[in-house]
Amino acid sequence: MKRLRVLWVGKTDKGFPQAGMDYYLKRIRPLEPIDCIEVKSAHHSGRNQQHGVRTESEAILKRLSRSETVALLDQSGKLWSSEYFAQWLQQVIVNSVTFVIGGAFGVDRAVNARADVTISLSRLTMPHQLARIVLLEQIYRGLTLRAGHGYHHV
Image (cartoon, rainbow, N blue to C red):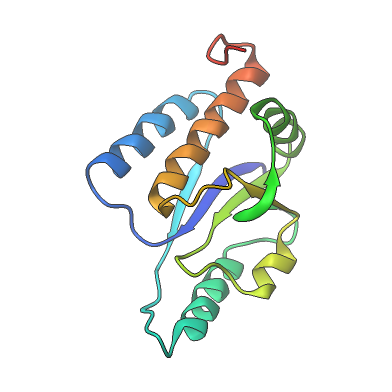
């Protein structure tokens, strides 16, 4: 079954982060069904950082199927233009695609190995909640490019 999902670690704060996400989800849903899945954030401490990353990564992997395309968002990933992202999204969305945003300390090797592609939204460091909004905006932009809407201006 075809599906578009975004999976991230941690809750979304009320206020600006939630409002920004709601804004783009409201725009995306008439074009394509989308699900957002929150994975519980592990409690990290100086000694348990690796354990927390492993716990979060295991929770992520449990929610991924073998048949879907997995796009991991990571600062060290590939930098794409919006046009290239839209073309890629058009190709993978015919089946299922899940975008994964890891926790504050990233994901472990198993999630990296499961990812079909690793994408960077920017070389700048940004809060994870802002990355969610930026990703949703790019998904919306990609869907409107595919549909021929006038949202994207060059």
